[in-house]
Amino acid sequence: MAEETDARKVRAAFEEACPGVRVDRMSPMAGGYTSAHWRFDTDEGPLLLKVPVRNSDPEHLRHLLVATRLAAEAGLPVVRFRSFVPHAHELGKPVLVLEFVDGEQASAAWTSLRAADRARISEEMGSLLGRLHAATGADRLTDALGGREVPSVAEEARNGLDEALGTLADVRIDGGWSRVRERVQKRVEDIGAVRPVLTHRDFYLDNVLVSGGSVRAVLDFEHARFSDQYSEFGKISELLFDWYPETRGPFLDGYRRWHEIDDGAWARIHAHCGLYNVVMCGYFARWEPELVPEYTTRIEQWLREDERRG
Image (cartoon, rainbow, N blue to C red; front, side):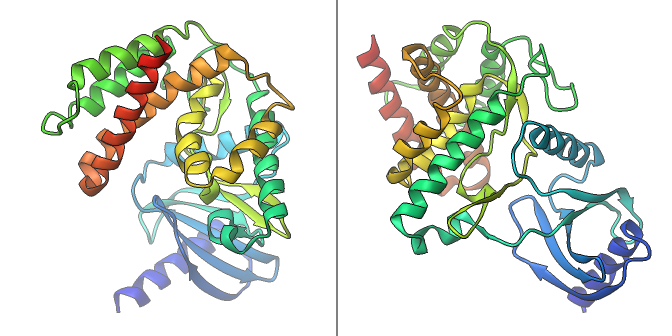
């Protein structure tokens, strides 16, 4: 009964968002971590309804809309939006309607792809991220709407470390968390001032749609910010290069079409990887404690690398 009620409310939300569009069929799809998705086959083609399950603030989805538009203007293939309703009456939540794009998440397709296709997709991903990082349009470190400003990457790091370490007091790590904070903060402070560019901040195989051995669309710009371009590489280093080592070379080749990666860039990447590992350790301490040992190991490995750097 609950599923039937939910389906009725979802259809009502779609009709509110797209009045006059005939629905031939609707079906639930596998959702992400933050949203539920429904496909609607209509007289105007297939459409996708996105319903948030965690953050129901309409501004959050408005930010997603603006960030995706900015990415499209930068030349990235994205899913286009059809309609936005800040408060759907039946659901009591905001909803988005998007054009449906055929394809498969790269993470789901990866093991079935030929080696040549994996290399091509990896290089495309690197080139697309480099293209995104060529989009400036801001002179401050803000979100895509121009809000949530921080004065520097060092201050952003302090905020992230404060929040993460507040949840890790009972977690043991070699050398203690004060040492971790000191080394990570020092490396981020060494970055200094940066030119803000548009960053995705959630760029990995789950958020890339592929078909025919190439990228069809880059998805989910919910976390996009104008920030240091190398802040992307913490997540990329773990969820792309470490999980799928074959992606590293082609990805970096694609990225270098747009940006040089010199010693200074690698130093910034190193700093952001240290910050990312601590932030994720704090995140999982709250939500999935069984993953905490994985991140303490990553932090300890980062510290050893940091010591080798001097």
